[in-house]
Length: 64
Image (tube, rainbow, N blue to C red):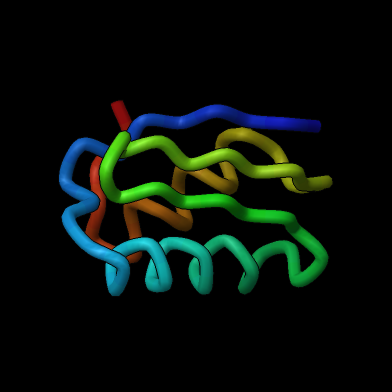
């Protein structure tokens, strides 16, 4: 499943890395592309959308 999420408070490449790592804790095989300029996170994963959103929120970010 491919998810397109907006993370408004993702500000830099370190934020992108943190979000990527958070998603990979729930799905190590996930393909994550996080772009701090567009605030978009694209995730190809077997995990549910709710699980991915929860991982991002628990990492300290908001999902719009």
